[in-house]
Length: 300
Image (cartoon, rainbow, N blue to C red; front, side, top):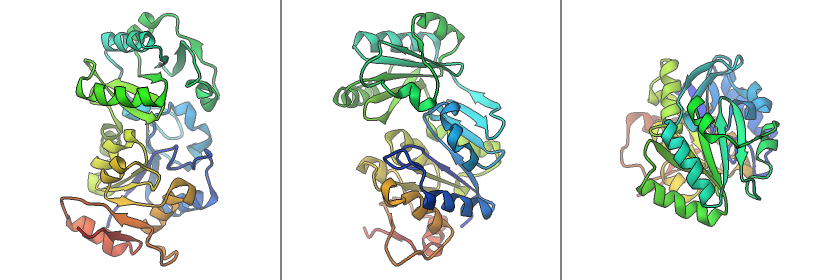
């Protein structure tokens, strides 16, 4: 067992359903870092949305933002890489979203723009502690570079559109939901899995040395890429089936349970982590289960 970096999602994973960072989770993170394991965040947020969480991230670690579209260095905020949507794709996504009646949320050069604001976009700018600008010149933004576009709308409509667009994607783009009411678009090939792979490569780490924890559909690519992946108990079945292990929910400090199990701390006799069906059994996975008594395999 040789995990050298842990990457976690924010909402519903690091934070509970009330957007709180609990003491057990914070203590478990510090215990992992004390053992020399790097801790970082993989999020759909912009880096400014992590201001109150930056102290948790190991200095010098790449932080995965915009669902993998940007990598920034913890501490300095130095931009390591950025992948923008193709200009025509960005314009098509914004135009089509507005035509469908959605709020269009656009990130360009770290600045937030909102067009056709509605009930599903209320509170978005406040979450980052910044003021959104009106989306009046999408063509100019597309030319200077759009990192991410979000359609904000009624959850039922967003869910059905995600399924449709995954079958018939917009050219040059791919999409995923980060919240029931948010459909997010990034450049084709950009997701948390590609971002986590790039972060690991920047540190000279192999996937066998990386652990990922998440709860949302946008976490699925990184859960599938990391050799040791943990889905939160509050995740959907699809997300759980994409991970090797399942922990407690975010409201039961599931991240703390997973991190403490990583360190083999015998918290109690409860079965906090369950192994999900995984077609390939590796020597590393076997060692992981044996060394971490709180993790147990599901029987086929």
